[in-house]
Amino acid sequence: MQISTEFLITSFIVVVSPGTGTLYTVATGLSQGVRKSLFAAVGCTLGIIPHMIAAITGLAAIFHTSQLAFEGIKFLGVIWLLYMAWNTLKETGSMQLNPQGKRKSPFEIILHAILINLLNPKLPLFFLAFLPQFIRTDAASPVTELLILSSIFMLMTLCIFALYGVFSAFARGQVLSKPGMLKALRIGFATGFVGLGIRLLLTQQK
Image 1 (cartoon, helix red, strand yellow):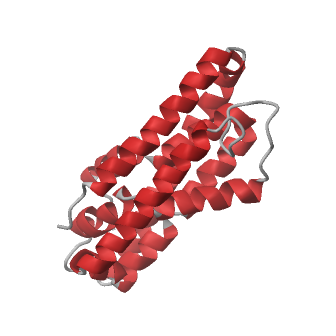
Image 2 (tube, rainbow, N blue to C red; image 1 turned 90 degrees about the vertical axis):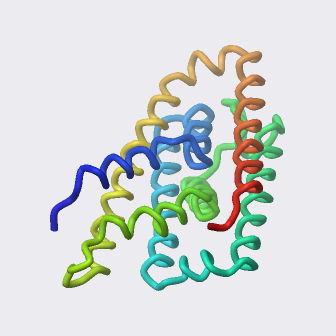
Image 3 (spheres, rainbow, N blue to C red; image 1 turned 135 degrees about the vertical axis):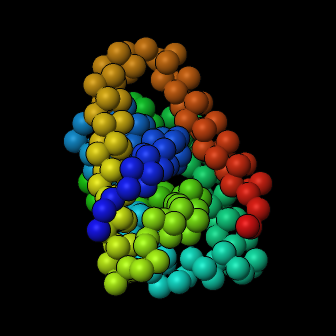
């Protein structure tokens, strides 16, 4: 099959647009360095798999047509984002930007990242509204094409999020040496999570 330029551009825009996974990967890079930020990128990428499975099995269509299912997932996402904001603001929270803070294990980072992307509102939209447009109507195996396109999307996510994490990790020396900047970053990340929560709360079923 031929991969269209439109698909690559659409995927790139979806991946680079600020979201929960981006914030988490950057925060992990700032607080725990390059290696841990790469685990965050891997976790965010793995968090795409449930959305891909939902698209293949048709579960995404159920959430798209069922008002109750849509609202349930939406409010779970809002609650999780508000929890992330609260946890980020805490100086002793799991996402603290403090070199003396608790070091999270790779498993904890990956699990947290998976949960974050599991409730990422832009992923169901991508797999339900955008991805089917790039699957040929005369395809011998639509599922195979969906898997190929999804794999490309996941690879793009891994690479871009890894870049986010590595960049933030290299900046951590300057950031961590300035307490005022640490506080501003905590507030900035928390505000970002709250903003994403409000945007998700206002999202209407289409």
